[in-house]
Length: 543
Image (cartoon, rainbow, N blue to C red):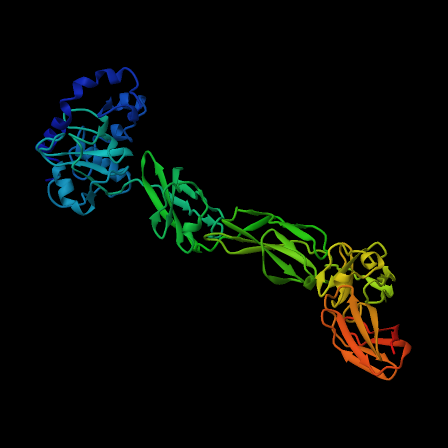
């Protein structure tokens, strides 16, 4: 049929006529903002709507013309066809067959769905709430949300309107997308920055026609990242190795939104720690001193921070932690601390402190020798005769040893007030001279005072004269020795006798001696501890 049928005109009128009487106040005062009300009329009539800010797109001047072979004038199909032609479509009905509103969505089902878009055709099937027996069509002016829209419409036997619809009773059967009004991207948004943990990425808005509100959503391997809805995004450790992109959506109240997905340059690389404060080392570079290191500061703050020590830039095995005590094997080497930062999603980072001066250990030199003097005999004097040394302020200590064990109280250059004691008999006496000074290597001189300490015996002789004989009793006593060994020989004239002391005592009888006063000779061989000795006595040999 060349025009919309009488049934179509009636349907468009029925769809709207029941509400016309309620619109009179809208012609007197500007309507409220569309977002502020529920479903309802915003204005009625070409002039009143235009004055209230709701235009008719020139239809008031062109409504006597037929578009898409629909009836001219107040007619829902002719008005919507006019808007499609004005949007750039030819004035030729896009389908064959009748022009009733109910046919629109049926014939154009390939481009009809449930998604409202600015510039789309809101379509009601025949006999559904909000439409009569021929259905109804309107022009989508604004999409507030997927469930709230603003439409403009005309109706046979009625008038021109703007209405707000909230999804529910009377919601369109579908939306026909002939030539939706979309936002055109003029300059494509671009991502600046390298995808790396801890490094901000930023996407530009691009430019759009018409100017639009731009929203962002960052994606990780195509999945939206919760809360990442700003123009800048800093990848965290969880994004290491994933590929990021950003969805840019341009919206405008009178246009269908346009969405672009902008990729980044590649997978997110591990982050890098930045040293903002260099580690430091305090303490003198001397053997025995303890160095202390601070780890410095990093950005961002690492999960783990460790101090390692180096000598001449070579890692000291096992030397970790904030302190290092310098040992002799480090002499001459420069010491540095290395701060090691690690964290999930980040590369390991190291920062070295400045190196110390070479580790120093001074040498104590003896210029004129020290030497031992005295004899290793009970009652003798034993001492160390000092020499000279440098540095002259080094501390000197003397230690005396008995068979390798320190002797309590024996700590001077002269042993036990110049005299060797009986307790030393048979023992070996040694001594050390120790030189100490901070930052110098300790030096020790060792002195051996000869073999075992000896003791001089005392020989006591008692004689008894007999007829042509003599009895001689010899007692051997030695300080520090309870039971001296050795041999005792007694001689009178040509007669002699030799015995081993028992309990330090020897008794011999010499016969065949000349009568008269005779001299008795006594000799003692001694031992390794008790020295040899001789003495004499006299005896009166009887007739």
